[in-house]
Image (cartoon, rainbow, N blue to C red; front, side, top):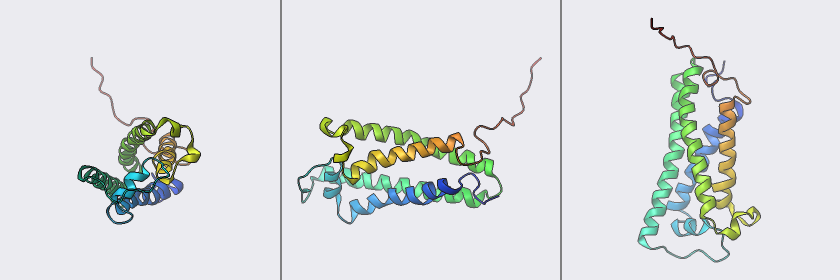
Length: 175
């Protein structure tokens, strides 16, 4: 048995390494380079150059969004590693804790995809070939994450230890 049985192979690579890196990266892009104005401009594909600066409120909102990306990346990275390290011989407990996190993230994935899609101008919604990397990250990549979380819950490509298993709780019969 692996020390992280509840998150094997593909799922471990995706949820323990790739996803945290992909969510922490926008923090650095917003706060350092290329900056908040560039990031704000990239949210909706446009051929015009990014503005040199944003108004203070918009800058603050983009910085806060960057912090949310950092928080999401750190939570999945640190919590998933803590689960692995604290419960190496208890895959059912690993899976139960991971499942709670992955369910919250799946709900956030669905609402993020919906909000991004609804926020795109209509002429861009159904033309993914015109989307930029940021739009693909916010829609295409998040769809991959949502489908991967769904596959994890369904037990595709992994052994299930908690979800989909018979309950071990004893029921008390009343007379």
